[in-house]
Image (spheres, rainbow, N blue to C red):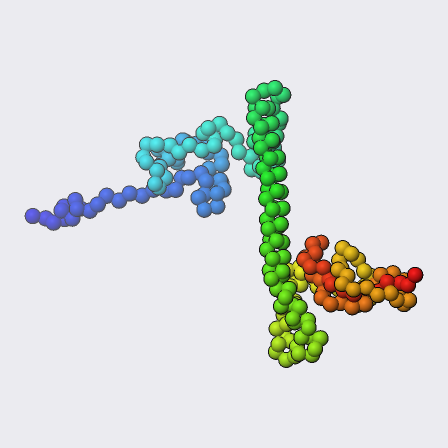
Length: 234
């Protein structure tokens, strides 16, 4: 029994194909040999074009020319035919008296009420923060008075002086100011006169002694400066 026939029969059939795609998949350009050849024409052997790799047999691939759409080589001159954007349509005001106009008026009213509420809330928050700072300074005023007396007596030196300076700087950072100096013009809204004396060296009420300095937070007086005042002689 000959084995030649068995070897021939056991060989698998071989399929070959040629790439007939009109558009190069790598460059995206139309192949020169396909520019003048309409889709579906026969090849040189007279048989229909073979299907490309990955395409089911018996089905043709539709391109722009099959659908009757002409694609120019240069598309830079094409005009934008995009429909109007939704923003432009939404910006149109509804007709007065319509239901949409009523909804829009309610929305504007609610928006205004919410803006006013936020402003009130911000003011209340700032007022609460200022009140907390003032309470802290009021509690520290006796300590600050003792520090001032110790500094006048020369007892604030060394590491203690460093801590004192840091405390005063921290008060300044939160907006607390210490005031009251000799030679300041007396102001009853800022000073509390504990003593008075006449003097021919001043033209108006003038502070000549600061017994306790004053403290203020912005425009609010936490404690008025307690001073001695000189009045001009009559």
